Amino acid sequence: MCSDRQQEYEVIDELSSRFGIECLCRVMGINRSSYYYWKKALNNPSKRSIELARNLTLFLTYHKKYPSHGYRWLNHKIRLDTGNKVSDPYAHKCCKLLGIKSTSKHYSYKKPGEPFKIFPNLILGGITVTGPMQCVVSDMTAFRVKGIYYELTLYMDLWNNEILSFSLSARRGDRMTYINGLNDFIELKSKYPDFETILHSDQGSVYASKKYNELLPANNIVHSMSRAGTPTDNAAMESINGWIKAELFTDFHITGERNVADEIADYIKFFNEERPAYSLNYLTPKQFRELYNSQA
Image 1 (spheres, helix red, strand yellow):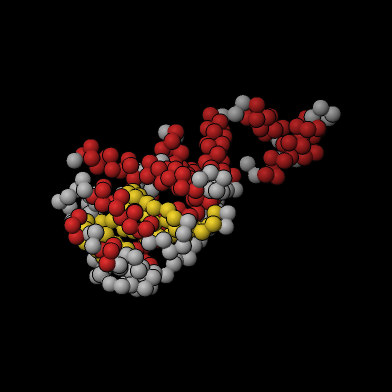
Image 2: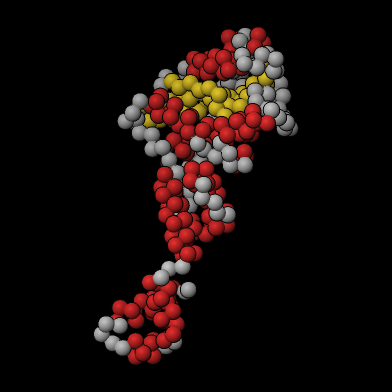
């Protein structure tokens, strides 16, 4: 119903206690039966109207909680949490009616550091990953909380986007975030001793260092590196880094009131266990892994 006609009905309803309905309808140029139909619908909302109102409430609630995401992601997150199933076009309609859209920020790529040793790019042109621990990607992202500079190093399984390990430091250029994250990843890798795992990174100085690379061969890990100044060679990790920073500040409202390391740990748990991913057909990394294990 157009907004003008809706307003005309509301005017008639407002004045009906002072003037006759028939007179008001005649003055407004509205068929009296149409007014009564609108009044009946107003007092007895249809099942469809009730369902729409319920869905609008859901989408508004989830948008307030996860404002960095668009309607498709919100729809699948609602489905994951509540079992409420609607189509993506219907979800788009709800968000359009509410006037809501994602508020994610865009972050620029960081330049890799100067390399000490360069390894060939083993995933250039694409790689087919069919199971866990076949290809793991790593990168460092930086952010500030209350003026304090933090560096977060991540190790992510390219197969299901699961963050396998991470390390956080409030010291600029702290090489141990890379090493600590690598050691935690190697501990998980020990469950797959026969797998040759590709570890892909940029050409940063720590990734290229002797100390870092001495840890890899004994654990059946082969190092792969992006071309210099080409962050798109590690597009999956770069994309995830962008989303993580957007979600940390836009959705999780990280402020430093709590211990930042604890807030990061809570977010990583959310990322792995509660955050549906488009590339996984809107399963979470954990759900995708469990589904794979159940079919193995």
